[in-house]
Length: 270
Image (cartoon, rainbow, N blue to C red; front, side):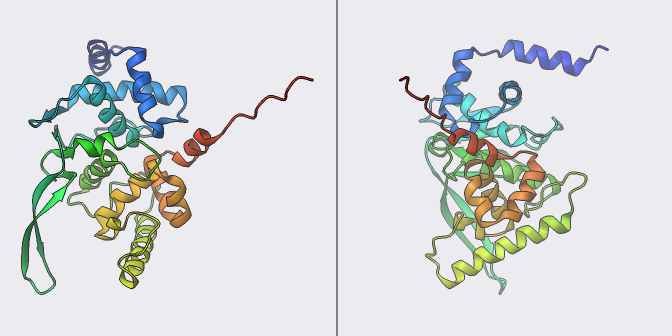
């Protein structure tokens, strides 16, 4: 049966087609894609192109964005959705604003006594409830390795979180997932991280201490580690890893192990 949506999808893919060499360069630049199956590789490539056709990338003066850079951004943006059906997970925004460097952003916080504090802070990324995703290009270009850092995934995790309203660390869970299980796993890990930092503000925590800021940042940082340092996350907070595995419907730890596997050298001939 003819489908307008399928026709539109294929038309978009034809209009924005890329070469095998272009995609190979993206794969080489993003180690976190190592270990994905050929089928997932094909899906990721198509969804990356559809993402770029759907979103507006706005660059500020001082940044020249290449086709390769666009693909790097799109592939990292689509990796978290690779195991999910295309149900408009990123429909809540239409624009990504790209800065040439970290930027200063006005911050506001009301403390427990009701006093409101305002200040400017230097950021590499932001995600707004009713607005764009903002990324500093150095953070984007530094992402993609197995090192526990991924600015793109971090900020887009906030957008997934916001699908239920204000970011609070609870994205819309799939059927079969229990809010109680999610909340228990996240809260125990969040409390543990805060306890470590309360005891020693310079503690060498297993994951970035920024995760202790609030539940929304914990979810975003945990998502970063899930995709870019799954071994560290599962060792520190296995229940968090299990919940993210159920939510994202992926197992990056398997991919990491596959990428680390070294073929056994052939025995020398006598």
